[in-house]
Length: 229
Image (cartoon, rainbow, N blue to C red; front, side, top):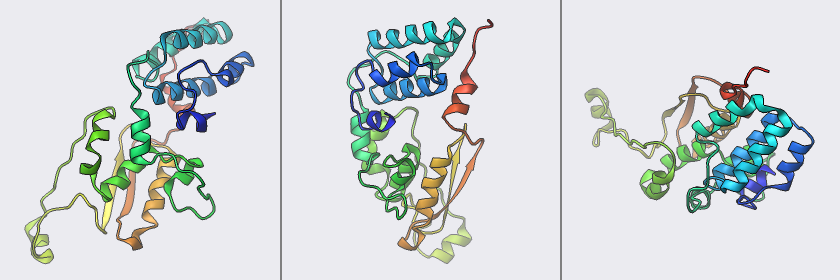
């Protein structure tokens, strides 16, 4: 189901598989992850779809999860539809989904999710080639501000390099530090390690730093706030 959502299929209506998961009282984290994913790729859910899901969750799992749903709304993971979806443009421009990816002999980082490349890792790849200037339109529709700064090299290094004197955004060779504030997933780490494995093609070796290792369940648990029963 996740793969279908990531490809933008049937994201604008109540999904029968999600309904079935709720009816069978599958793990609430599983249900919430699917609904949040559907919401994200569709730029929000139609009001009737959102209310349908919320009503079913409360009826099935209990009123104590009302605050969890509110927290998801505050976090921007559950919200009413807001105009045309931008996900299709982002997915196509950044090549987030790739068909026929080999997990045994991968040629693209999308192998980490059987055909889906983590957005953060793909942005790092585009920073190397062709550079973020080529995807300015996409960066403008992604959440949060974007800052690009060219760092001047110390005079001693400038003399050793000769002409130039700045660290280019192309990240040719050398080492690059990628720092995740708030946490990252093992799949994002695997995707960046895949990029590092291509250092012989002129790219940098990536060092990964993060405040925490997370996954879908731990992230949801961090914002879950059930009412006392």
